[in-house]
Amino acid sequence: MKYMLLMQFNARSGLPPIDTWSPGEVGAHVGFMRAVNSGLADSGEFVDAQGLADPGEARIVRADAGGAPVVTDGPYPETKEFLAGYWIVECAGPERAVEIAAHVSTAPGPGGRPLNMPIEVRQVMSAPPVE
Image 1 (cartoon, rainbow, N blue to C red):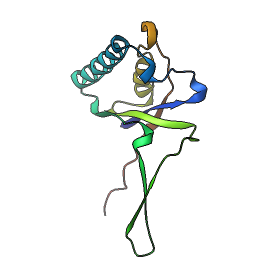
Image 2 (cartoon, rainbow, N blue to C red; image 1 turned 45 degrees about the vertical axis):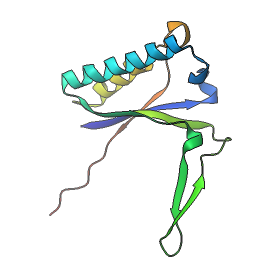
Image 3 (cartoon, rainbow, N blue to C red; image 1 turned 120 degrees about the vertical axis):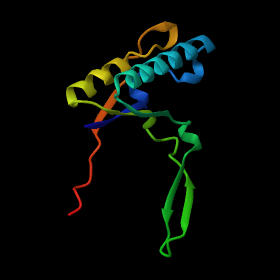
Image 4 (spheres, helix red, strand yellow; image 1 turned 90 degrees about the vertical axis):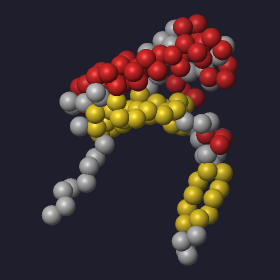
């Protein structure tokens, strides 16, 4: 089964913004994430993982009545939560996906302390078989 692990940040999480970390702290964090990805690849569970740009660079796209794209800035500063990155893993079941998420949650932050950040775990649904 495939699972998506979503790294969410919000003001209530108490996590310091990464732009306030020292270069060494950022390097340790990125190194941890690379080691996680390498371990998942070695176990055959890695499908994909990506960090996402700051929400200020995001754009919201909708189609107008004629189907043409209408692009607006977003999400807006009042957005309380944003997606910072994700992993897609293929593993035996939800217990293993939760185990991976718990490990990712311990990524180091300022001072090398584990962030214990919230990681949302969601199963990737597949379409029904074509008949």
